[in-house]
Picture 1 (cartoon, rainbow, N blue to C red):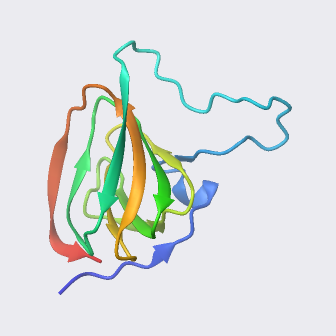
Picture 2 (cartoon, rainbow, N blue to C red; picture 1 turned 90 degrees about the vertical axis):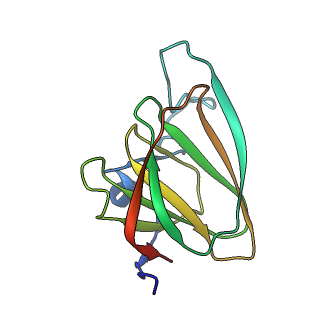
Picture 3 (cartoon, rainbow, N blue to C red; picture 1 turned 30 degrees about the vertical axis):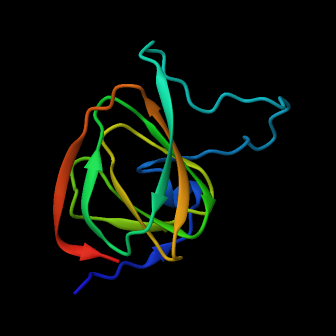
Length: 137
């Protein structure tokens, strides 16, 4: 049986332990704002992820890159956990773009038949997996 997590709303406060919401800063005058920078010249890539899974059985993390997730279509739940606590997961409705810090455990599942998410990250991605004792979803 799948473990059910409450699906939280993305807010700056609720998500700050894992990364940040990609949004225009309050009160900023500039029309163009850089919200994420990677000073290392390793290159970057954009990917389009089709999410059809109805549950999450494992989490991944990347020690060498931040990673952004931008929902395009469908309904996605984004599961995350702090670097030192992969079994202490939280679930967020991915209804806005977010960026996670390096080493944040993450995965996603769809509530709709299919969802599409655009992902940006470093060109070379180191990855570690963590199997969950109980699937989430």
